[in-house]
Length: 337
Image (tube, rainbow, N blue to C red; front, side, top):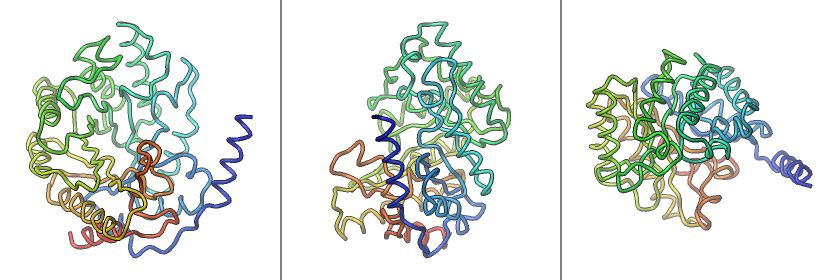
């Protein structure tokens, strides 16, 4: 029964899939070599929807797997690895001259049940083996890795997770060092949500970056997810990113979207466009801001309605792959860089 439902869903994705429309410009062309313009990618439309693939290939110079490289997807049962979705994305990126941002190696969420049950040295060994296996498979194909994802609570304390509980504060350092041994050339990042403006979480994130660098831990950059809303870009956003850049680190906007109450009216869509514009301008204003990635490029495939009922319309394109005001504003900013 479950397999039959899945088949129907996949057929539905095919049958009502929008065709690619002519957009008013090409993001990756306007960005040039100044910064990578990226998007999160879902496996289902990558497999099933030609219009989705066409826009993805044409508009973006960087791709991030939304779920395909998360541990629970790659290895739901210990020792039984499923590379199909991750390989599909990497192959697509290679074919279309796109960089791949690997996401994510160690995170408190979306871990297999067997990982959550490990203790102490067993967990440490499993994490190291996982990193070596995944990074090693995509050596010189994945340019950037979000090695450590969301290590802090909102109050700046370490996030409660199996890694923190069993391995203590050193788990992030160990993950970065292991990733470096697996690929000496890939850029290694830590990535955080809700750390875009000064505050307890951002300060803890900054202190972690300082500490890792001071002790010679391989760290090339820091990611700021930038999941925003009608509230706009928080005060101090640019200044916060600049202090990380002043450490000699690259900074990246890694998961940008702007969620709205549904249905969004014209005023809300104008506000959304201004938020996207400010994010793009901020990145361009910081020399070491090297990439701007959106968390999905079409409202047809956005995580927001799935996790925040009553909210959505968070991306650059509508459900039919048509350009929203937000797309036009980001394009305009890139054109005028």
